[in-house]
Amino acid sequence: MYLPLGSTAHKQGRVAGTNALGGEALFAGSLGTQAVKVFDLVAAGTGLRDENARKAGYDPVTAATIADDHKAYYPGSTPIRIRVTGDRRTGKLLGAQLLGSRGAEIAKRIDTYATAISYGASVADIAELDLSYTPPLGSPWDAVQVATTNWQREVMERR
Image (cartoon, rainbow, N blue to C red):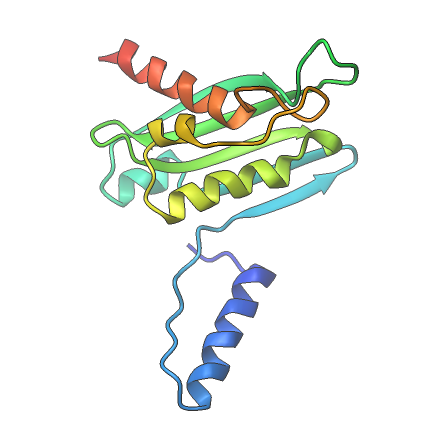
């Protein structure tokens, strides 16, 4: 899929420069991780959505979740809409999309998913991550973990 991103161009430039000087660098590829701010909202995505996952030979399942950006009892919490895509057969995490307010750390959270995908994590692996917690900034189960736990529940219900 063609997706011209500055971060990808920088990485490819480093590979080209290293190789031009006699090195043997390889470009690791791109998940297409990106975030965009539109007024007071931030939308972000990484990895595969259903159509591209099917084309790549996966059996994708996507589950949608709404989770708070931090503990609701602490003032100013806002909802984050999260879609997680995983492979039904293997449980492998394939992609994620988030939409939330500017202060909801959307870019940080999409980077969590991108890192997990890069290292071949399963959807279930996300629940085991040791993520930071303090009531004004997050929850004991971060929104990324709430969404993957919901994915697991939905996959079990669809069987």
